[in-house]
Length: 418
Image 1: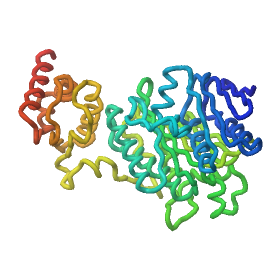
Image 2: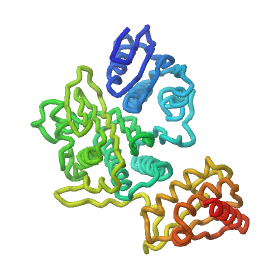
Image 3: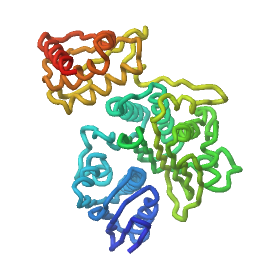
Image 4: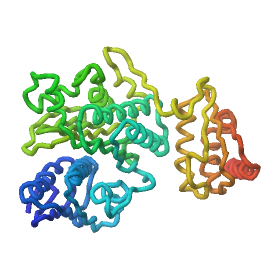
């Protein structure tokens, strides 16, 4: 039986039983035990038993998933036992951890959860773009009161870190990415990106022979303009992402090789690890408590960088006069408050982010909405914006009279009780 603070794990032949809380500080020891089972003992199959696991976090689970995926390419299969806790068992399936560990048994999650966008894999630029779009779309639908500069900064970081996987990692399985959303205490997001490649130290040494240790490599990686290839990359991805987390008062962790870099409460620490990790893990937590703060983080060569964003590419017209919002593309259901809440949050964010632009809500392909859907979206927005604000913010096109009457009734009912 091995003990690592709150985590307990035990190997019996080709099975690892994991008990307690599995966090970012624990994954290396689990990977070392898997390595012993497959490479030293020679097993072609292993079992990960999470039945006694009490908590699990993306910073630990994504490296384990990546390692298992690389083993699968080498024809070594993995079986898992889900946690006994019903809530934690759902987390394993809803985040896709179960799928990436044992795809023969667990399908990909089809929908986002309220507090996370499930783990996704990407191997090329098309899949990378699709993943990032899903992540930032999830933010728009979930986090109330987003400031546009903050939203664009997070999207920029997601693009940069995932781009590093494709351009530098040489990972045969590509990369994994997951986004979690926090609302209870401080408002913010956490994204985790992981690959099974050559790692930052080996990648940087190809261009900078004066890097002698893995710690030096990670310390160098978060400096402005550091990259393996100046022709294809500016070398600002890790630097800019680190600055975003630092400025916001969030946290930033990198694990690669035998080194770990951690930023917590604006204090930076670097340390050596006994167990090497062949790959790279980036875990970034960003706080939105101070709207507009993150634009100060994206400064390169002393100049502010203003990136394009998902809103500009998907919703805004070139004239910057109107936002095109196609309702049929935003939801698969229009019959409940539960389905309406992400729509209401997204519309509220678009209104706040794109002031002066009218949102054209197009109901093409939507034949009916429920009264509860109309109330949750339009009744509540009417109360929040006021009559003039509501009229100036939105217009409805290609809608049936039935839908317009339902919206009008929800507004009148809300107005009469406020």
